[in-house]
Figure 1 (cartoon, one colour):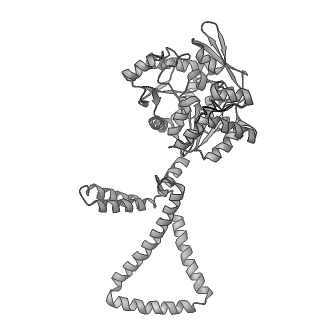
Figure 2 (cartoon, one colour):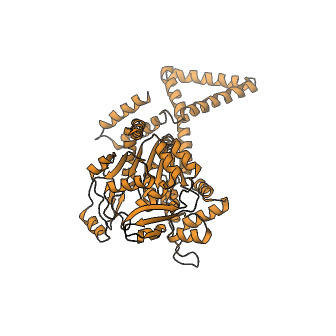
Figure 3 (cartoon, helix red, strand yellow):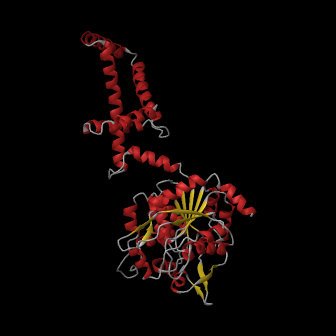
Amino acid sequence: MVNIVQNALNRLQKHQSNGDERHAHQTGIVKKSVQWLAPGLFVKRWFMVTLAGVVLIALGLAIWVRLMPVRSLVEFADNGLKNVAQVVPNRVSGPIVLASGFFLLFWGQMRSLKAVSGALSPQGDKTLLEMLISKRRRSRGPKIVAIGGGTGLSTLLRGLKTYSANITAVVTVADDGGSSGKLRRDFGVLPPGDIRNCIAALADEEKLLTELFQYRFSAGEGLEGHSFGNLFLTAMSDITGDLEQGIAASSKVLAIQGRVLPATLCHVDLWAEMADGRTIRGESRITEADGQIVKIGCIPENPPALPAVIKAIEEADFIIIGPGSLYTSVIPNLLVPEIARAIDRSKVPCVYICNIMTQPGETTGYHVSDHIKAIDHACSKRLFDAVLVEKNHPSPRSTERYRQEHATYVEIDAEAIQRLRRQIVPVNVMEEDEQGYLRHNSRKLARALMLWYRQNKAEAKDAKDVRRSA
């Protein structure tokens, strides 16, 4: 019934393009009102409960006072209605009074809801109906596990949170540079930097929180160089006992959509074996070594996974690996053996998001297939069956900008990728800023991933079974 009414309103709007703006506005109000009758909002039942309550209150009062005042009132109303009916026939006056009653009831409810929405959204950018529809849709979204670190993962989460509230971000804790490195050395805490970025990305009031969490002190003894978000997470970890509990407490305070988990609670140091024979220890030193990485590992060799991470992977509907720095953001999570095994056992769609540009000191000269080989080699397993790649080349301005920094576009070597038995998912999801730097567009990337997920969720189980038997 609701769909029929909505379709009729849509047709009406199409034929009134040259009509009165006031009439169009009224039609829009009616259309929004009809949306309250859409299934799944759990509004209609409570509206009827409210109406039933009004009737029961009236009956209760009537019974309580033994109907004596009510009888007199009814007789008075009856005489008044007879007089009205003599002037206006009952077939006209009856519907008018009935419609007036429903109008007042509905108008009162709408004004109440508007007051509530104003309290929940002081900026007034969303109505209560829009917030309710969005929350219901996101709460029913797929269970997504996103694995990575750095700015790449936070960019992805910023887009995914519009599709699902059931997101688990698994973040590397191998960072040893900058503010995170200082806190790690001074307080013995796990590096909070990447976790901070993800929490800010999943927050509803993202703009304000991002500014607050990313605020970096430029002066002050002991504060200079630290970001507020890192200090906040460090304090919460100390108060609650560990980083996992600190993140959970922070997430409640900030009301984020989803949750953020460290890959492990173990203090992990990365090491890399270079093509020239050097062994570099420390995440920040690896990128500065300016060499070709042939092997990557961590100390301790087999760090234990956070149990909540394994449970999230086992219950996931969709697993996403990347984007992010290949050797210092993505692979460190997969060096936790339990995480790699859990992904391998999973039969849900799993995709790797390849970076758009190479990264000096990590992936210089790499093609897409080289990224895949590096992940396969690091965890000795084929964890994903598809790789999402940017199909368009950067603009000449961006190409020149990155050439000066010894970075290039990650070429799609289709034949080599197919030999690795991976599906290629070519998309256009990049954006260029004013300085010529490239990033994944959060909204476009999330939309492309969700489209691929819907198309492949039925085939994922069979694909993994075939892969294991190969």
